[in-house]
Image (cartoon, rainbow, N blue to C red; front, top):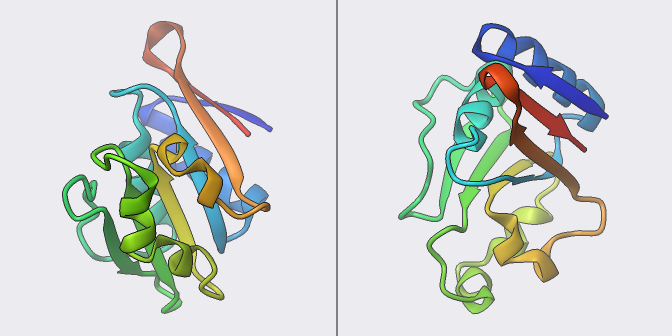
Length: 136
């Protein structure tokens, strides 16, 4: 699946992604710094009805939100971890296998061996005119 979007139609792109992946499981977002991973995750959360302020969990490693339906959304940012043992120690795997939960992961390449087999690997890249392309 491929999606091309800008900030003008980011909501439609987020809705299309959730329609494709479903609203539970693990979504791993790959892409360089500044490509818009956090911005896209914020929009996914809005589409799901999360009312909390969605921020990158750069220092906390994980933020937890609730959807309008009351299901958990776990937002991870593994940019600052030094090794996979830190993710293991914080219990990341337990989150990945929580029933009915959605896990949104930034910088998943740092914990690749921990990801479940059914993880959606989502690549974001900047294309001309400031648009973004998502490839799954």
